[in-house]
Amino acid sequence: MRVSMDLELKDIPGQLVLALKPVSEFKGNLISVVHHHEKKTPRGKIPVHLVFEIKSDHLDNIISLLEESGISVVSVDEKRYLEHGAVILIGHIVHTDIKDTIDKIDNTGYAEIVDLNLAMPRVNRPSSASLKIDAVSKQHMSAAIELLKSIAREKDLLVIEPIGVN
Amino acid sequence: MKTIRASIIGFGAVGQGVAKVLLGKSEYLRSIGIDMKVVAIADSRTSVIDPHGVDLASAISRKKDTGTVGSETVSGTEIIRTVDHELVIETTPTNIETGGVGLVNMMTAFERGMDVVTSNKGPLALKYGDVMEAAKKSGSNCRFEATVGGAMPVINLACDVLAGNRIISMEGIFNGTCNYILSRMMEEQAPYEQMLAEAQELGIAEKDPSYDVEGIDTASKLVIVANSIFGMNASYKDVTVTGITRITPEALSLANADGFAIKLIGEVNDSRINVAPKLVPLSHPLAVGGTLNVFSVQTDLAGPITITGRGAGSIETASAILSDIIGIYKI
Image (cartoon, rainbow over the protein chains, first blue to last red):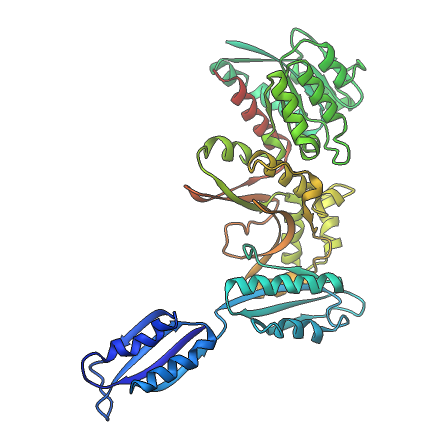
């Protein structure tokens, strides 16, 4: 997942390296570091904004390490889902238990259905739906769409996926 | 100047297109050292044979006026077997179950050491390995650019023009009928059945449209691509196929609202051959409308290359056949 973090460092040499060390120790991938030396806080500390990618179970360790070395962690903003995808479903979407279809994706832990638009023209006619899926990574998006396709096979639904997913 | 004696076996839209193109381009062909002489033409019931060269203009008008090309009843296969010539232009209709008479014609031509240029997908989609083996054994040329993508250069692009590149994957729209129906369904917000009827009215779809709309035509083309470009030993049964008959106008609108068109996409890569309706971003090069065909190849050196053009039509398909003929005989 991608994490955006605001820190406050003491205005003494070596603090920035100290702040980056825990990220590197847990094999995080730094995306950006902005060091606001000119914008000191009222307490005389220096704000730093970090963005990095990290396995989600390592985030707490990084925060504790930072706090142990005297760095204040002001805010942490996690963005779990980096991939956004869309698919279209056609068939008897509602009558084949739409809740079950959505739950099966949501329960994966790596992908979620975040939006659904449904068009039901007439009774007994097939419905159409557009689904927005968020997933942790590209691979997880492919896996989520494969899962959706296997659910669709059981329920006789047609899945139309974007080109170039696999 | 090299005189090439040829037969045109199959005189429907494509065969007649070839005759027209050979007539119109005879000067040009002579200028590059090829003197084309058509010594026999066969349609499904009749034939005309003349060792001194069949008059193409009158053959075309006879076919138009009477529905038959000649007065003789010698079959196409018989012509290949008995009339002396070097090149068989095989334009009989595709039969995807057995390969049909096209397969027999091609094998007979190879037995006699003749070259074959064809627009017939059936024999190659079913028996690519056998056909190529037979051609190789007799030292014959076998060219089939016209089987995939009509006027668009697909096979020759990948095999000749992009020589040295590894083709990593290919995807595209290889069926103009499906593209027309889907494009019109979106424009008119009309159901599939209605736009199929319109396409049939315009002659874009056949009376029995299943070959196009079920994805069978696209799948056959992909098999030929997989074998000739990707060096696979695939046959029709290796393709996973989903057609367009279940697509609804509501699905097209919902996709459009998200910035996508729905297109019947054929794709080939090292691991799979697949035909299915897919979401294509509206700004993507593959999002072409009407009856157009389009494909992209991913190559290791040249990166992605996209070609779009007319995937069917008598003169357009004849253009691909002509380029194959020139490819074989140009000095």
